[in-house]
Length: 276
Image 1 (cartoon, rainbow, N blue to C red):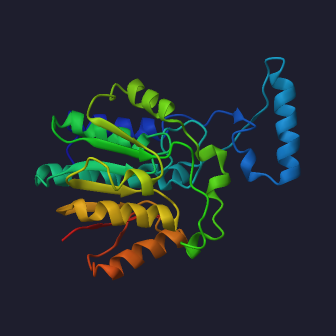
Image 2 (cartoon, helix red, strand yellow; image 1 turned 90 degrees about the horizontal axis):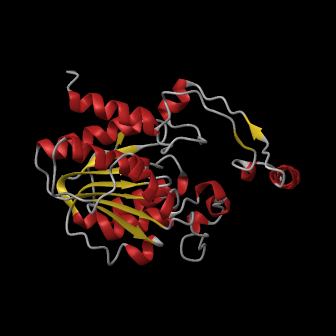
């Protein structure tokens, strides 16, 4: 494929957002404390607090392979996205297709973490000179919701709400957009739980619908409120299809609405289809 200036910029942006250009530096021991057993969390937390009081920190070194980064199989310390290069490549392909074919609508991601995929969307619009479409950045910016097993039994055992690592403030995401020079009036933040924000979101049409909500509830809320706004020829991207709750929500929605468009594999966890 021809290495145009636009593609070279987007390739560099993908590698930067996913921290592919550098080895992973050590991170504060608290960063991944949620993964440890309770007694280890207490020990690590106590040590971190003690050393922090005198201006020091304890760090841990995590080593990731290039293949793990490309597949998005790591929870990184420094990257602005954890979706990996293959899912970023897929996002680029979808964006370039809707721009080339003039599929009407804005772009949205539901569940943005540090904002990397949305930053890439805005970067792609900028580099191709698209001046009308908006990028909607939808998240609670407080982590994931607690399961509601009475309403969504598939989420009964879900633990994502306990992961502090997934809690990234709207201020931090705004700063991430700004450091890439991509924060402007066409980046629209939707702060709150999907069930509260998406029904009234100021969106008429979508060309890219990217879901990264992990859970059944987050996935079904996004599909019910946004899929009807996805234009014919637009793309529905499911980041967490390999997770049982997310996958069940996808198939429940598709079955209910008799959607038969082919689901295509992106990598070990992601899938997408094009709306016919």
